[in-house]
Amino acid sequence: VLTNSLTSVGLGPALGMAAVPNAVIQKYEGSFFSFIKGVLGGDLQTLAGGPLFLLLNKYFEVYGPIFNLSFGPKSFLVVSDPVMARHVLRETSPDQYCKGMLAEILDPIMGKGLIPADPATWKVRRRAIVPSFHKRWLNRMITLFAERAEILADDLQPKSAKGQVVDMEERFCSVTLDIIGKAVFNYDFGSVTDESPIIKAVYRVLREAEHRSSSFIPYWNLPYADQWMGGQVEFRKDMTMLDDILADLINKAVSTRREASIEELEKRENEDDPSLLRFLVGMRGEDLSSMVLRDDLMTMLIAGHETTAAMLTWTLFELSRGDPGLLKEVQAEVRTVLKGKERPDYDDIVAMKKLRYSLIEALRLYPEPPLLIRRARTEDNLPAGSSDLKSGVKVLRGTDMFISTWNLHRSPDLWENPEVFDPTRWDRPFNNAGIPGWSGYNPDKVSGLYPSENAADFAFLPFGGGQRKCVGDQFAMMEATVTMALMIKKYDFDFAIPAEDVGMKTGATIHTMNGLMMRARQVNENEPVQSAEGYWEMQHLKRGLNANG
Ligand code: HEM
Image (cartoon, rainbow, N blue to C red; front, side):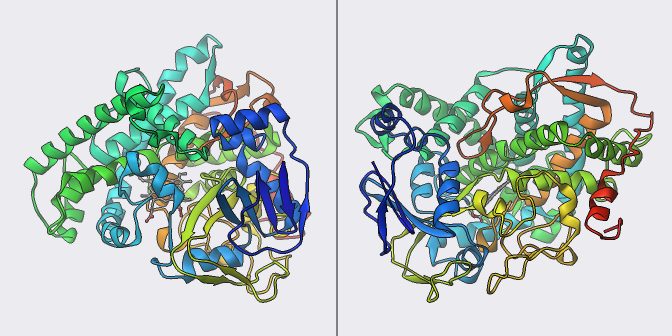
C-alpha cells in the first residue's frame, strides 16, 4: 500500500510534486483494517498507524533529512534539517512561503488571525500585535500567572489531603485557559474551579481544529455539513457562542476606548484592564473592524493555551519519571529562590535557571506543534544541508512542506543522547554533525531567559523561527516557570499509573493518551530539600566540564 523511495514516501499512490529519484516499494506497517478505517474516515493518524509525526520520524531514520510524502492527491516535502529549516523560516522573504493547508483548515476558526494569515495580512497585523507584548505588560502578567497558579495550588489541597488522583494535564489546561482569557481579553473563564458551557465550547472547538488538521478529506466543506453532519452542527453552535462573547467584549472595549500612542499605552500601568484587547483597541490608527480583532484574539486564545499546558504536562512527566536527583535539585532551587515569598517576580524567574531549562528541555522532546506547515508561493531552492543532494533541492511553486521539529529535536546527528531528558545539556556547546553551513548550539548565544532557535542555529525550534516566530514565547516561558514553581514548591507528585502508561497522542499539540494521573503530596515548603546528589554538577563533571557551566 505504501510506495517509498530513497527520498519519496507514499501513503497511497505516490503523486509527488518534487521530482524524486530511486523509487522502491515498502510495506504499509499498520493493519489492513486500520488503513481502510483511515481512508474512510479521512484520518491521517489512523492511516499512518499512529501520530503522523512518529511515522515521519521512522522515515527520517531511513530516508534522511528530506523526502517526499504522498497520499492520494496530496504531497508534502518533509524537511528535518537545520540549514534547510533556517532557509525557509528566516532566509526567505515573508512572501515566499505561506501557511498553505494550515490556513485552509484554520480559516473557520481563526479567519485571518496571525497564525494562518496570508503574507499581506500578516505584515500589517504583526506590526500591530508585537507592541502589545511589551516589557511592562509582561512584568505585570507575572502577577496574573502567580494568582492563577495559586488558585490551582489551593484547589489541589483537599484532593492531596484525601490522597485523590488528579489529572495534571487537565489541571494545566484549565490554569492556562484562565490565564490566556484574562491576558488576551480580560475574560475570566474560571475553569480551574468551575465548569461552564463556554469552557466546554472552547475545548470542543480545539478538538475539532485538531481533528481537521489530521484529516486529509475536508469533510467540513461538504455541502451544508454544519446543518446535518454529527460534530459539525455542534461546531457551528460552539463557534457562534464564542463569537458572540468575543463580539461583546470587543464592542465594550471599543465603546470605552481611550486612543493613545504606543508609548503612552505602554505607560498605562494602573489600567484596570491590562488585556491585549484593551491595548490594541487603544492604539492610535489601529483597524477597529471587529473582524480583524476577533480573528487575532481567537488566534491567541487557541495558540496560547494548550501549547503552554503541554509544556507543563511534559515537564512534570519527565521530572517525575527521571533521575530523582534532578527533580530534587530543581525543587531545591525553587524553594531557595522563593523562600519566604508568596509570589515570584521577574528576578526570581531569572534565578530559577534549572527550572527554566527543564521546561525548555521538555519543549525539545515534545515540540508543540511537532510539525510546521508551509506552502511555497514561488519556486525556491533549498540548500543541501545534511543531505547528500549536493546541488540542494528544487522546490516547485505550490509545494506543501512539513518542517518536522520533532525530527530536528530528536536527531542523533544534532544532539547527544537525544531521547534523554537532560536540561543540563543547554549549558554546554554541541556540534558533532559537521553539517555544512550549520554552526551548532552555543550557550554563549543564549540571550534572554532561555535557549532559542538562534543559539542552536535552527536545530531547535520550540517557538518556530524567523519572521513567523511565536509572539507569545516570553509570555509562555514566564507563565510556565511561575506555574510550575508554585506547584513543585508546595507539592511532591507521584504517578498514579505507571509512567509507561501515560502514552502520547497528538493533534496540534502533543497530548497524553490517558491523562497525567498523579497524586500530589503537600510538603513543608520551608524545609530545605536534600539535593546531595548534585545532579547538575555531576552531569557536567561526567563530561569533563566545569560544574558551573
Ligand atoms: C506562532 C509555539 C505560546 C501566539 C507559533 C509558532 C510556534 C509556536 C512553533 C510558529 C508557527 C509556524 O511557524 O508555523 C508556541 C508554544 C507555546 C506558544 C510551544 C507555548 C509553550 C503562545 C502564546 C501566544 C502565542 C502564549 C499568545 C499569547 C502565537 C502567534 C503566532 C505563534 C500569534 C503566530 C506568529 C506569526 O505568524 O507572526 N507559536 N506558542 N503562542 N504563536 Fe505561539
